[in-house]
Image (tube, rainbow, N blue to C red; front, side, top):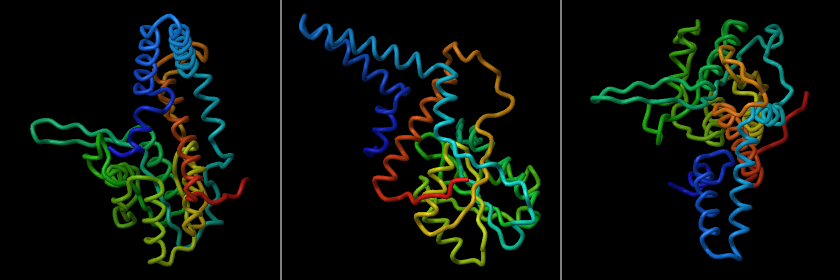
Length: 267
């Protein structure tokens, strides 16, 4: 486990790791003596308030709106005719194993990105589709995300001979570098990046930083089959959405600090 893994596990607001860390610190302060007790009470009270707020659907929606670009999904085929590559970025998979048999399935983000990639392919007709993502699942021991994406793409009308997998990258930065190499080897003049709205800013910025001039076609952020929830009642799904949005914000800051992002045109 490297420093990045520690940050993801322990320091992202809304995560179980940060919750346990805060509870431990608060309890330790309360037991440390009278002078430290008020700090312990404040720590625990603040923790409750933060997690309550992050578990509200309206908070999750607000954070997602902050991250989202104002890009609309690609809708006009005539402007994109020619040698076009549709890059579909993986967004996580779940892997299950029992008795030596394994199964990898797309998470919500990956499934919705694949559906958008298939839609854009049907719109354009003859584009090359590049699903991207290395080994997924817990601890990266599952099938490559590109393989899982491929199955969804093929099931939704993308021919197998129009799919070229990128199966090694484990981060957005690595995907940008690997895809830049792949694109430089072919005569692909137009590139469409398909990913979630909250990830689009980092994806396009990372591509631009390695010299790939791309346009975005965002997928849905959430499935239409999701059960509606009251915006004022906390729930676990909203907490997960808030955690993911805050994690993406932290990633944007980190990428910018490393010089891995370039400006993207605003619509």
